[in-house]
Every structure is written in C-alpha cells, then in structure tokens.
Image (cartoon, rainbow, N blue to C red; front, side):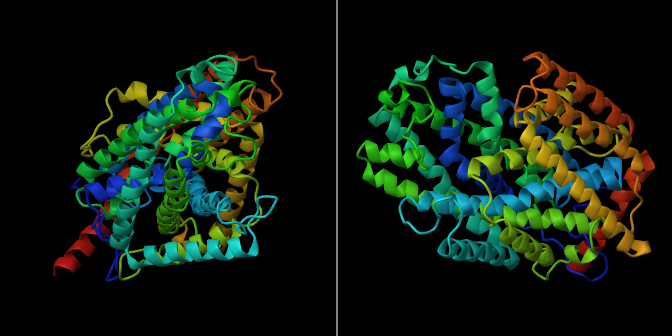
Length: 544
C-alpha cells in the first residue's frame, strides 16, 4: 500500500489539515504539555506521600512513561493521523473500541485546560488576593480571568497550527528556563543532604507510599508526551519527526522533574521534617518553591516563580485546547458524534471542535475539589488512553504487517505487554474512589454514543464491531473489582504485593485476548485506503 501523508481528512474541495509543524515545534508541543502545573506542585505532593523515596517515584514514572512513549512513537510514525490516540484503536478494533479510546482521551484532554487555569489562578492568589475564595473555588473576579484565558487559548488555536506552534515555542523556552534556574539556585544556596532520610527514613511510608505518589501528581506531571503524535496529521515528515519529538520530550521532562525533586527536598528546612512529611513547607502553603525562595530571602526568585505560576499552566492549557479539539474532530470524523464537530476551517483547524472545548472548559470551572483531587481522575483517564496504545500496536502489527514502520519498537512482544501492565498498575494506584468516578464517566460516554448513533443518519453510522466489547468490558469491570478489593482506597481484601501480581496477571490476560479480537486485515486496509485517498486528493488540489 502506498504511503501518503494525511494532508486532509475531508474529501472534495473542503479545506484540510496543513503540514506546517517541524521537529522542534513538535518536540516543544510535547515538552510544553509536560511542563505545566505539575512542576509547581508535583514535588510537594510526591514528597508528602513518599518522603525522600519520592525520587524513586519519579524515576519509576519516567521508566513507565518512556515505555509508553516508545509505543506511541511507532504508532504515530506508521499512522500519522490527527487525533491519533482516538483513531488508532478504531483501525484495530472498530467503532466501539475506537469510541471508547477516543472518549477517554477527549475526557482527559478537555478537562486539563481548565485545570491548568485553576492551578495558575490558585497559585497567583497567594500573591494577588481575590481570585480564589476560602473554599478554593473561583471568585467572580477569578472566573472572569479564567474565562478570558480560555477564550484567548481558543482564539490562538483558531488562528491556525502555526500560531499555536510559535506561541508555544516562546512559552516553552521560558517554562524550561525557570525550573532549571530554580534547581541550580536552590542546590547552591541551601541543600541539606540529611533531608532525604529525615522524617522516618528514606522511605517513611514504604513501597506503598512510593507507588501511591504516582497518581498524586507524578504521572500527571509527565503526561502530555503524546501531543506530538496527536498533531501528526499536521507535521512535516511525521514518520521521522514524530518519534524523535515524543521520545526527546519525555527524556528531557523526566530529567528535569527528578532534578526538581532533588532540589526541593534538599532546600527544605530540616525542622519542618522533624515530625514527618505532612507539611514539609508549612501548613496551607500552595506554592512550595515560592515559599522556600521567600524563606531563603530570594525575593527575586519568588517573583519569577509567581510569574511562571501563570505562564507554565497557561501554556499547557493552550496546547490542550488544541488537543481536545483534534480528539473531538477524530470522534466526528469517525462518525461517533455529529459530523459538524469535524468541520475544518480554511486555516486548517477544527474550529467547531475548538468551540466545543471552550464550552466544556467553562463548565469545568464549577466549584470542583482541589487540584490534587482532580489530578487523580485525569491521571486515570490518561492512563486508560495510554493503555489502548500497546494493545493496538501488536494488533496492527498482526493484521497490517506490510505497512512501513519508520520507527519500530524493539522487543515489542515483551515491551508492549509490559507497557499495558504498567498502565493498569497506575490506574489501580489512583485509589478506588477515583476508579469508580472514571468508570461512571465511561458509562456516560456509552450512553451519549448510543444516543448519537440512534439519532444519526443511517448512511453516516459506522459498523459497531461489538466484538471489541468482549475484551473492553471485562477489562474495565475487572479493574474496578480489583480496585474495590485492593489496598489503595478499597476494602484491602487482596494482600499487599499480591494485589500488584493480580493486576499484572489480569492485564496479560486482557492484552492477549484483545490482540486476538482485532479486526481482519481487509478492514484495516480499507480504512487506511480511505484516509490515504482523501489525503492524496487534497494534496493534488493544493499543488494544482
């Protein structure tokens, strides 16, 4: 089958996506997503959960995320489709499998932008009061600022992918520079090596604390690497540039976050750790690095950190408005939701999907719980989205073996199942309360899909392919049951360590069952042929 880049997802004379994003811009999109509110708050939440052993949490998360990034790199290079995380499972498992992955992916993406805005305003409220009230919700003034920010993000995205890439490039340069300066200054000015074994030893809460730290902000901080793959439909030379951008962003992000945790723990006042890690920077402090800088008399650094508390989350929110729009576009393009969502402007952007993201983002500004509470839910949704990728990779290798794969995951028969197991473990670690809410959100998605399917035009209804539910329903049901019976917010009926083995064995069974239930080769070939035909037709129109 000829390899044709996806310049468009529409046929005829309609406008399509433009391949204007180069390697550095792609890498900056992923890196800009990784460096958001997570760097400002992740070190504190990890330390309160695991103490000095929070370093192990970051390294473990880095290994897991690198593994998942390698999987996404092969898929993004072989199938450079806009909103790829929603569309790769459709190729392998059909409509219901594709919708499930797409719904979860959209759910996490559309909520991250408002979460990042709320994090920025919550941080800034400690410097400029009046944005957040006493219960942590936005005030009228704060809500006005939040809406204005979301509107600005949407305008930049509507102007086109080049505007998005260039504005993000400027933001990322700042977002990288400030954490690096913070690490260097804190290590030079105040570093107490004894802090790493204070408050009950290096691992005061044992392995349980190390693992529990992952969904409390560690994995959330490192997520976002897939943004380059989401924009593969708008990338120049995606087969070459997408893998480099994804892997490069993950490695840089992991190194930076480990360094930040080292600097954070080393700079803490030893007196604050005498009675444990409950309040290492002082009770009630929302901005840990700024608080430490102020305590050390580094007013200039504290000022920079407060400025960055706006820029870093805002930059990530900007990217995720575009990401959620492309995922909504993928759902509309595949026929899971009304086709109007997949309309593309003359500038090559899914403008109706951006409007939908804006409206949903405003709904998310309702008085939700704390940043940390929201992080657990978003992390679980993200990891379920990531979990589809390893299964999809081996399924597509089986049914579409002749496709050119510019990047191939080495030892995929081993690493892909390991990546799937890792994703399942993270979901388990988020606690039963979070898993329960996530499963309810997935059920709500199926209800919406059923309504859209029944009310849609018969010619636009994709085949359901219910065979995918044979592994997806047991996967979700089994995860929920293990979480309910397990050690992380559950009934604690499954013994510690045994629970991790149960998750691993269960994950392997689901993984191999899913691969066996992939669509036949001719269905995958037909779906890709349609995409490539539309892309070729649009490319000819542009060169005519």
